Length: 152
Image 1 (cartoon, rainbow, N blue to C red):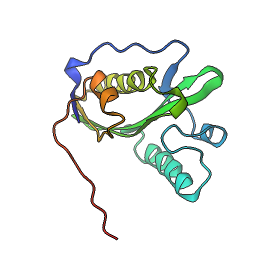
Image 2: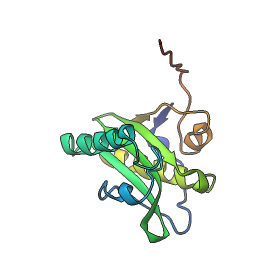
Image 3: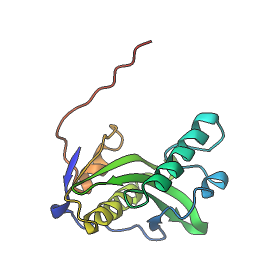
Image 4: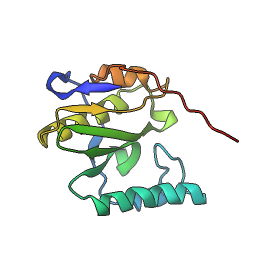
């Protein structure tokens, strides 16, 4: 999906939700990561370490965002890699019990404006069927379909 950052719709943040850059990855030792789930397996630890590594390698390009509910409980997360003209969105997710409340849309809208403030003019992401409507509400449009093929 693709988004023109010059045409972003207004997207409200649900009451009781705060959206900010991920302050520290250790929060996911106490709470499930909204995209990866509980950090209880080697692959999930690797994914969390990957995010921390990317943030350390490219501190002016790679950003993680988190949607926090009461008690600083992470309920949504997304990663964004910002270049001069395009922001790439990755690992976008909202905890299952917190879906369908506008949290994902608000979080992506926040990250889109963040990228826009840094001079980026467009954004791209791969969306699952589940996330398709959420991405459309914040300005993304389908430009092509991509299928994955895995060989045994």
